[in-house]
Length: 476
Ligand SMILES: *[C@@H]1O[C@H](CO)[C@@H](O)[C@H](O)[C@H]1NC(C)=O
Ligand SMILES: *[C@@H]1O[C@H](CO)[C@@H](O)[C@H](O)[C@H]1NC(C)=O
Ligand SMILES: *[C@@H]1O[C@H](CO)[C@@H](O)[C@H](O)[C@H]1NC(C)=O
Ligand SMILES: *[C@@H]1O[C@H](CO)[C@@H](O)[C@H](O)[C@H]1NC(C)=O
Image 1 (cartoon, helix red, strand yellow):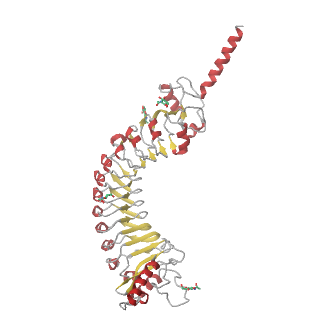
Image 2 (cartoon, helix red, strand yellow):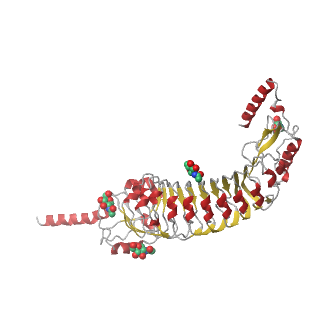
Image 3 (cartoon, helix red, strand yellow):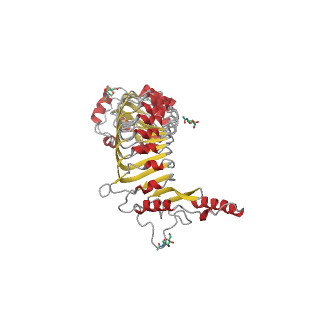
């Protein structure tokens, strides 16, 4: 790609030279200070980047160093990209004990700087992110990425807030700790902010609400605490918001409804409470809504789910939800994953649920659903273990014919009232040890009147037939 663009530049310059106007770009020099800054930066960082056979390679030459690219500014080559990490076969790979030298801050035309799998020994060789110096890159730097550097420690430098041209800041799975500097919220051009998988603590700064161009915000898998700030409502361009696996608490803010373009909202595994909020209905672009594993509680029916027609994934498991499954959920035509497991939901499960045209996984287990599951054998066959209804003591299933291979896992077949069967199906036994309780429940309720094709009835029927035959024969 780069060689190609160089070819074009070269072509243009050759044409220019033909007209006797300008020099040859390939002959264009690199400033000595720039060259030295680059070599000093990578010398302490990268192991064996140069095999020693020759003079140092020209970093912007015809056989460039992988991971370094350059651009022409006023007839001189400058380094604009420095990627360290095993991306390509002959990339710059970090040495066993890499250092993070301030020489990199002398590369004042750097647009993109990334470190991938570089600082990997948090015990033997923890490396601090330099707290100072970043301001030198403020005029140029657009993308700064640290990925998979568990040995990169310390705090996020607050002077990242000076990198006003930054469009992408990715600090993914490193060893950074401390709180999130509020002045990151004043980076006016930021489109992507990923701080996932560090050890960050403290609140999400209110200042983040000013990131009006932000498209992706991922602060997941840290130890962030405090309430979900209302300021999040200011992120009006946002497409993806992932705050999962933190210690966030309090209510879902009403302001979430302002995020009209949001396609993914993942808040799973926090400590949020206070019930669902109707303002979620306004997030009309949502495709994935994941609130699982929060003590949010409240009634599932509070929302008009049919307003979220784009939903593909809806995971509301383990939230302490009450009520029954509203009809509006069975109107979500694009839904592929529905998780409602481990709540306090009750009532009947409508056969409509099986008619969701795109459904591919449906988890209703660990609730208090009652009555009979009235889905087709075809449905159970299609879903296999991606249909979960176990751990609902008052639930049984009925299908149109006798087949042992297509039963909902961990659910007992329905019995006719009074026709007590001592042996639960082996599947039901696997599903949890509440059989006694559930049979008691069945006996005391009248829901199992539908006889249908239940095979257990054949046995008494045959005995009766035999007795009838005996009587008929005797009377001869
Ligand atoms: C050393 O690198 C140069 C330039 O990249 C290359 O031409 C040469 O084959 C390499 N030598 C060895 C021994 O790898
Ligand atoms: C939301 O998305 C629409 C369509 O993609 C776009 O026109 C609009 O500008 C976006 N809104 C914001 C605030 O970015
Ligand atoms: C389950 O539902 C039944 C009746 O619908 C109710 O009596 C019972 O208290 C519920 N159990 C739990 C644990 O919510
Ligand atoms: C179950 O399905 C059968 C056939 O589709 C229908 O006749 C019956 O009324 C349904 N029962 C319940 C409880 O929905």
